[in-house]
Image (cartoon, rainbow, N blue to C red; front, side):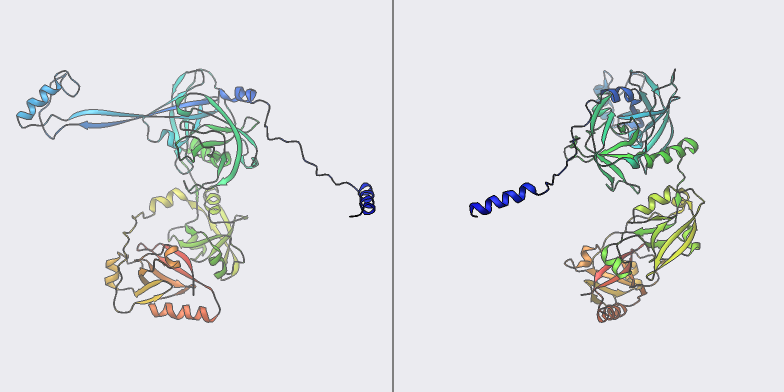
Amino acid sequence: MTPALRRAARAILATAPVLYLVVAPAQAKGPDSLSELSTQVSDAVVNISATTVDAKRSSRNEGGPNLPPGVGPGAPFDDLFEEFFRRRGQGMPELPRQRRSSSLGSGFVIDPSGIVITNNHVIADANEVTVILNDGQKLKAEVLGKDQKVDVAVLKVKPEKPLKAVKFGDSDKAKVGDWVLAVGNPFGLGGSVTAGIVSARNRNIDSGPYDNYIQTDASINKGNSGGPLFNMDGEVIGINTAILSPSGGSVGIGFATPANTVEPVIVQLQQFGETRRGWLGVRIQNIDDAIADTLNLGATRGALVAGVDDKGPSKPAGLKVGDVIVKFDGKPIKESRDLPKLVAATPVGKDVELVVVRSGKEQTKTVKLGRLEDGEKVASKDGDEKEKSESGGDGSSQSVLGLELSRLSDALRSRYQIKDTVKVGVVITAVDPRSEAAEKRLQAGEVLLEVNQEAVSDPADVLKKIKTLKGAGKKTALLIVANGQGDAHFVALPVE
């Protein structure tokens, strides 16, 4: 560039508007101090000591007469008496013994009269639960109720004077990046305070049916379980429940059950001593892109109905296997795990509208919710069937989609322990380990019921339907497959 051009360019730049990137002041340093907040909430945080006493019988051998007082394991002449009974060909007599095991955790007071919240797994099957206040005072606790599914327990103590209590906040308002405070009893050290931020929300760690944890990097260790996670207003937005830790200590990935998840459960436990959750009476599964395409959903959404309980409320409402529930009580179902949480939080007996997609069209159904706990009592809970991979059958085997298929016969029913409730279908006798079917975890002994929502009873039926799909330019076949107990699920496989 010549000097003249350089001068002209400078003149143009000098008169052009200047654009600045405006950056907000950095907030990453966090609050100046958390001492005031810590002082405000610490007295409401308690330590939990849970003791389990198991009555055992202690003996070195079977049989033997009763021992006189003062004789037995640990007595001064224990070895001598053992030798005496051994020489007589008798075993040392059986003695009563108690085995005690203890666990430590955390909790917090939500009512000055003495209502304390902790995790269910902290107290488990404890015979004795003691609440230790911040000033060292120890109070025997009564378990008012506990719930394993969201891992919460409600305790009652009788203090001499009203206790310092904290209240729940709206956990739905917590945002990623918000500062939080965890207070608890890590490693039995007593009241310890750690700080961090909300790292993520709605985390699913496969610990239960209602997973939607708040993830935080505030240090949470063994003994912190059951303690509160506070926002900067001193409100409890979560109960510290679990950590992800290869080492056993804090690596900055902790999980707290949101306040909005546990609060309704706590109310029920206080009122009834048990939970009363809504029940829809369907088995559901996730929808992937392939299944969404075959069902003409337009997008991956909803919960796919893989089974309808004959004694559940959905049966008389007209729900069918293959329906996709896309809306429950006016709330959209983005993925299948959204549905159990919404159903459980809905009052038993309420008439709820469901929007389902059936054959590519939306329909509205009305279901009167039952009670989940009643459904669980009548549900059959047989164990998993033993996996088998031997092939064979009756000379009518066919191979398609990486599957070896045979007609359902008495011999195959006996071999794979297929229940009589599975009346029709085609038995999978082998799965090619290199196939997509193997990746989708199809197994020998399962029964193929439908291909693209049309029933099959012979391997030739399957071959014919796959050929038809190919001719129509379809890339995926939607299968309904049942295990030996008759529990069905959907699997999408490429037809090529």
